[in-house]
Image (cartoon, rainbow, N blue to C red):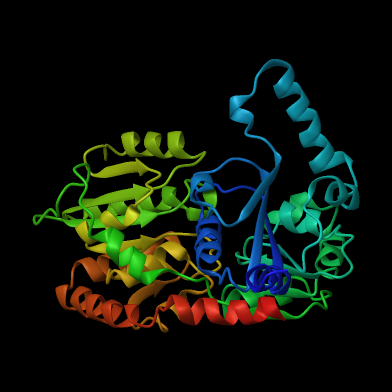
Length: 395
């Protein structure tokens, strides 16, 4: 055996085999964070695999080539006839009929040193059935499970869900507040909970923000431009943001609102915009692969969410020096340094209205938050975020 081939074999054997499981690669914050993580984990130390339960999502094409990719279910949007029927049967087997241990043994890649359920819900439930006794099992929690226990419908009851989490060796929360709320929601979970903030590629965000796009109008000097980013889903509460925005206009404050994202509420939100005669003031831009070229054309980022774990979109806005007005969600105190570089309102519609009005009617306040956001931007380092995660994965 030559020295080169021995070194290559030694290199392959020494790398930790890491499996990430996620439901899909839809255009959400957790999915974007996972792609960032896969791109920047040290490939000389980790042999990475990604398994999606369903092969759909905006970020499928962004999976790095060195990551072994597989899926349990194919893209149903491309199926018809008998193929679609067989898909539906397999879907029922995986989600409803088969025990999770059977699902794991039949469909999830085996032989890994670390198995990571990267999102609460079905990925966590299925990976809890792992028969790989030599692997460390990690569950990643991206949401505030106290305020929005959305996974409750997946399990028979809360005790069942707690037992699932007790099968893991470590639970990761994306913010201190989401971690503490997880413990309060699941007091019988004995698995340790640790906090790792989401890795954000600051340099890439800055680079993409400078790309020009003919579709993005330049800044309008005659009115404030507000922007929000997220799935068009009830959790993001864009309906109340539109109602708040209507009150802002009724107060005589010149403004327009951009919402970037897509989801099931698109039709309802467009109907609300039409009802309030806001078609010239509110734009639903849909999902944008590069939302960063929109943000420099705006004056203020708004998060109207009912719940968050640690908002990726708000973090990206801060990195670009955009002032933030947000409802009180998990992670916002950590992100905005207790309100130093953004205004945090109570999580109520009237409170969000007063917060927005305060910032939009006082240029000194807006300028102060802008300067503070630029300073806070310097704190975000991809290396600082990824390094501790790599150490944790190596165990």
